[in-house]
Structures are given as C-alpha cells and as structure tokens.
Image (cartoon, rainbow, N blue to C red; front, side):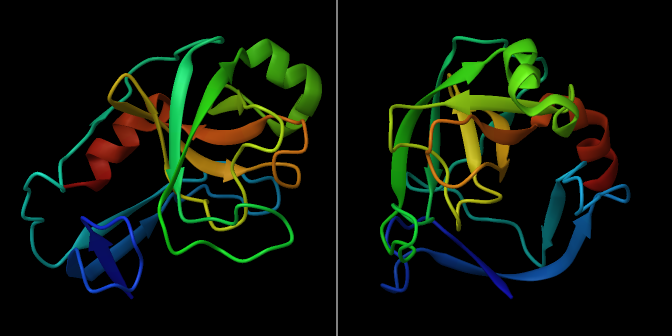
Length: 171
C-alpha cells in the first residue's frame, strides 16, 4: 500500500507517492459498533510540502451544531455507482450532539460528530477516512452513515476526542 498526496485526479501521474512504514489502528476500534474509528499512517519518509501539499491543524474542541464545514473525498457521487477519479468537495453543516443522538441513539457518542447537507449531498462509499474541515482545521474523519445522502446525518470521528491518542501514537 502507498500514500499519494498533492493531486486532485487519481491515476494521472501527478502528486507525490510515499511508502508506508506502519499503519496503527486504535487499540479499542470496534467494527461492529464503529467506535474509535481512527488510525495513523506512518510514512517511511517525510512529506515534501509545496503549494499543492500542505499540513492541516487538528481540531482541539467540539465545534457544536450549525457550523459550515467542508468535506473532500474520492467516494461515489451516487449509490449505487462508481467511485470518482476526481476529488470531490461539498459543503455540510454540523449537527449538535443532542440532535444526532435523537436520530442514532446509542450508535453515536461524544467521540462522534454529525453533519447534514443538501438533499443528495453527503459522504458516500469510498469517502471513509476522508477529512472534514472547519475554518482550515480538520475536525472530523468520515466514519459511517445511512446510505448516501438520504436525509440522515453522516457520522464522523471527532478528531478533538482523540488528540492525546494521536500525539502518543505519532512518536
């Protein structure tokens, strides 16, 4: 497996390719309940930053509901359908923890963040692991949802809930 950075079109030869040294999955990851859905990829060498490749800071606190967010991903643009070769970008709005819990009950907790978008717009298969951004800071990681943009909130791993874990496992 390799990591490609700095491209908006898959398989066109642009971007930089990096070999993976190690992949760390959260030790309490639960695939049945989709809890602690986070991991870290350690590369064999450092990324070379330029105009197309920049770092992003990670969220340190819960953002609450009603915030404008940006999701990017390579997932399907409709379901059923094929994944896209061109990086997609959509605007979403954060849903409060309490409103999300009313819909998903015990399936979400304080380590999740939920969003809603316009009808037909949201995360889909192939977007998992992608970044959710608020004001230039990554606040979420695509985790799961019900179908694709079918009127239910999408569920993300809340990056701020895992700050200590991220720091510890980047050593």
